[in-house]
Image 1 (tube, rainbow, N blue to C red):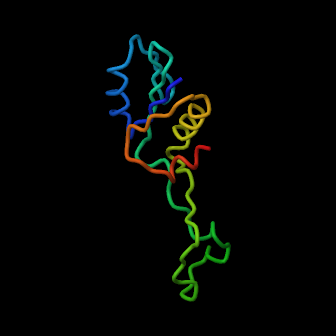
Image 2: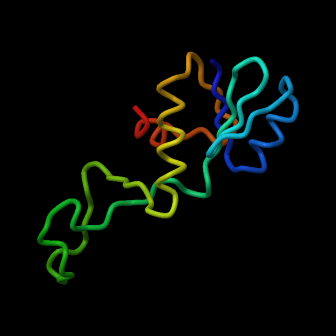
Length: 113
């Protein structure tokens, strides 16, 4: 199955419109007649982790902790978009081929694997 990952729902619907019909709507995706699937992100599925994700000492802000400059930036799934993140992650695991229909973002794809 080819999985098309669109930047947002409206782009996902536009992509699906040019793919074989009939379409079957799912929770966070559209399956087209040949079995391929179109899904989408909703705004930002991820956000930067809070400082205490790097060190519990950073839970309480102190001037002596600043600046906080991680060697590797951490991201976390936004609570508001968790269900769509999980839908995309599940579909990626089922896909044979991925087609990015949005801005390239290696950091985002890393979270789905």
